[in-house]
Length: 157
Image (cartoon, rainbow, N blue to C red; front, top):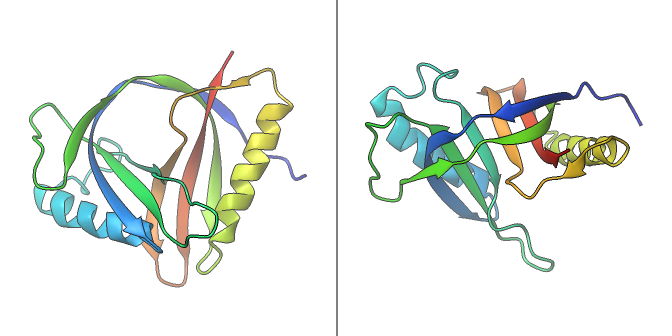
């Protein structure tokens, strides 16, 4: 197994706007909803202040091509729910985090990196936490290049 660069972080409590996609390609559906809502509000202009996280919701089921993907974008106290956009308060938690580079057309790299991170945790002093697994968008998709995610594996001491 190749070495992973893993860092342990405490993600502070955050207020997020949430959108959900469901189907065979829910990530794209969720992204379109988030972009249509957040871009006109200027929330994509400061990616450090308005971090974007995603995760399967619900997970894929055996025998079905459909599953869900939920996206969160950090927002301030002045942002209100609107249409399909919900506002959530997410508690802080500890995570083991590693970076996942996803070249164009190599989406399998995401699952492979998750498996490596889970194996890393098995060999570490940390136990699996019960809070949400997350994927943070570090860079947005660029044709021919792909994108970068930070994978957040929930942990406890």
